[in-house]
Image (cartoon, rainbow, N blue to C red; front, side, top):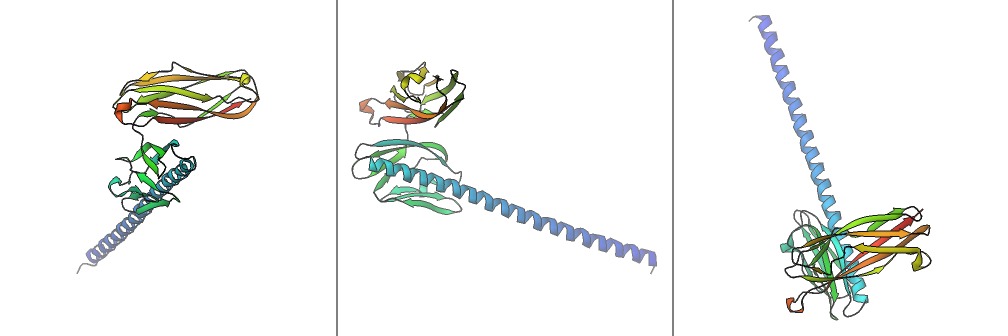
Length: 251
């Protein structure tokens, strides 16, 4: 046998074995990384779901304490693995089911009833105390693109921001606003305006409004806008109330 040919064959075999070992290590590393990514994604989904049920349970508690007729509307983000067909709101439990994970739930000391939206993502939950339970359901009407406002301005300055209203219901809404302007010592310190404010919003219509606040007093204070959307009585829909907290800082 040619010793040089034998040597070349041995080197080729060793090279192939080394390459195979490197490929095996690479595959193992990729599998481990994908497993870690999947675990992190699953944990993130679970945390988002846990936050959702905590927010709903806390808001439902406030509505229950408020007595018959009390209402609230809160924004909740549902994870992408949310399964509406296996989630429920019943008896004294707010239960949210995640595909590939299981149940995430919160118990309440009072009866709750209602239903979840049909898909994941951001939704507004409307709650009402009907004297026997707190009914929780997706909002059927007025959508607002902000859940709160934070404004900062110099003393005597004017701060303007915008809000988008969208009527997602199949009927028109009469719109009214109630405000608690974030003044410091007296209402003369601060002036709040919303323009142009729609008195009626047709089904599917949208309206962008400008919120303007001017203040002569330095400090940090809070207020809110309460938007009330009233549907026709014959529609059977509830009156929708959306509260938008305002934080104003004046330097």
